[in-house]
Image 1 (cartoon, rainbow, N blue to C red):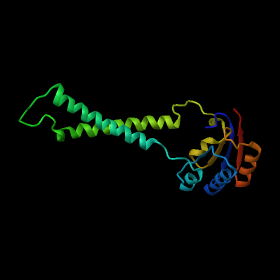
Image 2 (image 1 turned 180 degrees about the vertical axis):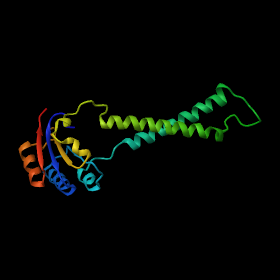
Image 3 (image 1 turned 180 degrees about the horizontal axis):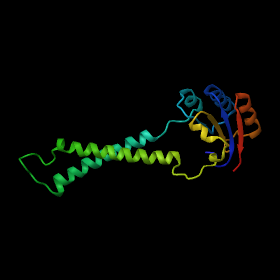
Image 4 (image 1 turned 30 degrees about the horizontal axis):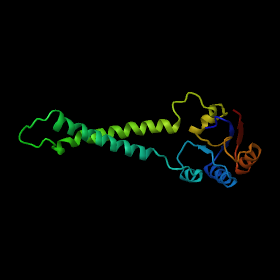
Length: 176
């Protein structure tokens, strides 16, 4: 976020932040990001971000893990090393359940972690937002709204005025 510059404003309360987000949305801005020390459903809804694909990625990876676990055990038990012990069938699937479940969970967890890193653009040792004065307060007691310069409706002067009217205590324009 803000790799190409933008405007960032600091807000004292969530209602002012939500109002600024809604005003920016009405103005046509789409590349918005909010920074907050706590979860606020109104902020999430106002941002209108699309749902993350992480759940689908994890489900697909879990299904692949399930197939891999079942296939690996079926191949080894029935084709690679068939051993009939105690008169049981070679493909005794109840015995395959624990490993199959564990591999499904492992694949889903690894894919979820990788998807999280990918969607968060991590690891990133430097982000231009670190240059914003007071940004460390976003983890303590302040709320921030950032609008990227990549936004098609970006106009720094009007966005600064919008944030002032919405109740921003400080506003900063970041240049790339």
